Image (cartoon, rainbow, N blue to C red):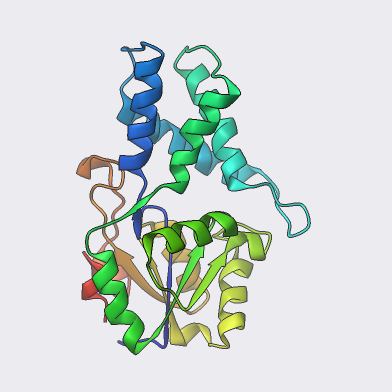
Length: 230
């Protein structure tokens, strides 16, 4: 089934966060001469801390708390969880900046270019607008639109986030598909009548055994690369 528009989650779905963030965590631990903490485990704990904050912190358009600030606060808390000393503001800033240096999965550039020739493509991310603009400009990945939760003042899976993006595109839910590596995102989009495409990213967390999974029958398409999207 072809759609008029495809809305993409970004962190984990289009871009690899685990590699760049784990590199930054490794540098921090090495500089602090800490050998008792696995950098990959730290990154996974940091990502989970972010999800907890997204679920619990109220947001609005007029009083938006930057996601980068959530990552910075989370870095200190994860350090505390491992029994480490509180990091300095400078170290926190350096480590947190890694969430703005994500890299595309190998299939993204060519797959997105092909898809964009036949349909509208847009991001729909919980990450800050400034981060999205910086990332896609640096990576030279063209999108027809960049949408983020900040524009709505509500994180996915809040229905308003999906519906506002569709409103801006002037497209009905059934004419658009949400593409994500995370079941919660697709379940929310599907409940609004959008198409659902699960993009399997086995190394999102560095270990295929920890990757998100969905049964193919629960989504309209189950793909292993952007190139496979119909």
